[in-house]
Image (cartoon, rainbow, N blue to C red; front, side, top):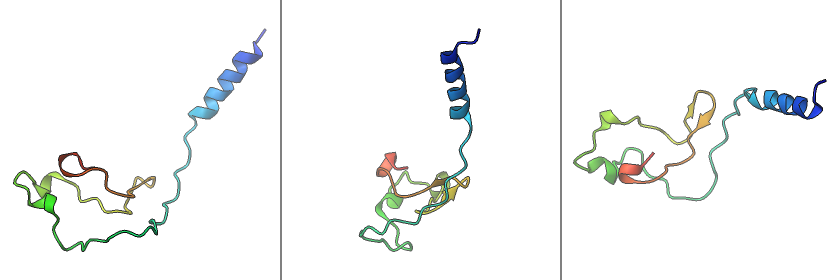
Length: 81
């Protein structure tokens, strides 16, 4: 005889493992903050170890794989993402 508790766990596992459709991109925040001129180089790019070919120039608001949207910069210097 099939245990009802085990059936419930199996069904819950199947539902949880189904991939969700991607979320639509969200509009950028309207929070007030200072905007930097994109043509002006910032301090990190003038460091001796900085090599622009070693980094992807991610832009705030950019969407990857129709799912992940860049909403801000995390960290500074060698730990920036």
